[in-house]
Length: 201
Image (cartoon, rainbow, N blue to C red; front, side, top):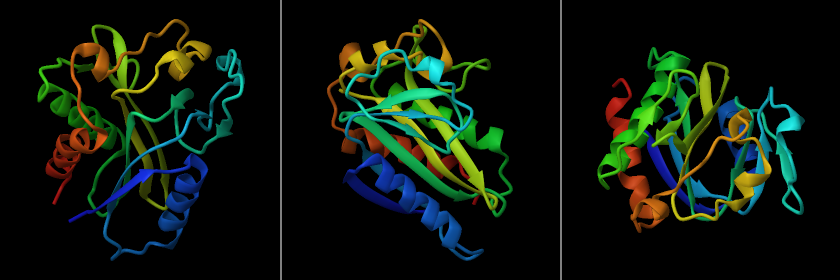
């Protein structure tokens, strides 16, 4: 059974270093963990991210992360769930983990009568063609870290200054624009439950 940690608002770099340290130090008996958090305003660029997708980042910091994917933005009001999972122990492929995270977001949004879908050409979750949930993972020593983000009641304007996830013109949305008012803590419950239910026992 995975350990769930509610971390509150956390600096991105500190959380990232903590994930790296946890993954480096874990062994075959270490329990998997799910971290629930949100970050102060920050742009992050994935391992293969191209700086050309950062159009006008202004005063917001840019961090070169070791997750997969391109450019994205994190800020208060965005739910972040990090999945620190031994995928070898669970006999879980990377694509299966991505699908699990996508389906968890879709399930959670359905609880609020929001119909979201995944796309085969672009990981993440979309509502009427606009991105509401993103996924970025890193696999090291057969274990995953980083995870997913869902735009809840955050300020979306910083997304205007990047090619979100490497796609020019990709629009984003949030639960608040879809008539749903919910705290990150409450939103985290169905997402986390769906992840735990889907993971092999």
